[in-house]
Length: 369
Image (cartoon, rainbow, N blue to C red):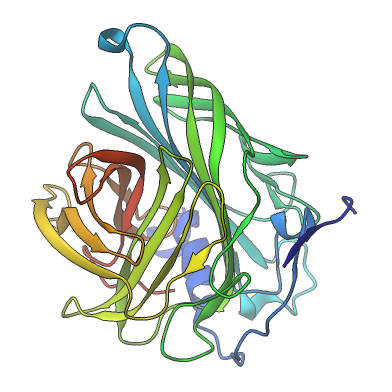
């Protein structure tokens, strides 16, 4: 069950951001014990906020938006904003206020469908000094001039990057979707490979996008995920494939698999919730990802499946990228190169029934968390 409660240059020439990243990764790979997460009741707005006792946490907003006007002249965009928080185990006992106990990262991107181009940017800082913060009371995230905040059932994203900007409001139209077993989502064969995980699909979206100095007033739909854990990846997992799809009829589809170096599923799962009805959580073995077409990145030389056949208990769908090159190079923050972009959802009759985001990690290099 979920409930809402009242709001209660350095030595060796290594850039400082890389030093911070190295500290964060060392913290995540620390020696503190890991254990199976207990079942718990998620409470809101508290669980919109940060959980700093956990090693890894992220808030992830994706969506599709378009300008008003004649269909032939309308501009279409995908957008993404992700905040990450990483607990650094090695610094938790330090008294200095300069100790990097928590690191905050952020990625943002706009997919210009007509222009067939992805624009993206990234940030990293240690928490504190009014530079980076993650409230534990509600969703209130800040990294310099990038913010993701909540007030009631409305959530707001604001950021300015080198070539683009976002100023978007997302209004809830459906209840919180608790993933897994009432918000406890298994991610591997061992019970300790799990996370607390919920989604807010079908968010009514409005606001503005700015691209190369041109401003577009847009409306659309968005999806928000929030997940926190002590351990996510099984040692044999190199990355994952994930989709979060808003269907045109108001349904919501999540499907994912953790993948080993041979492309086999280490674990899989997801959920389907009809517009009016209860969520069905997928069991292991009920989700199968079959790659149909690949695109090779000229930057990383990684080969990504940009079209999939995804079998779920709800239906067998084709997931197709709107443009192939939606690879993000985040080596200056989280250290990874991965693919994440706007995609279409097509049913077994060949009809497009929704849009959402496809994320693929571990193709350019093994993902370590």
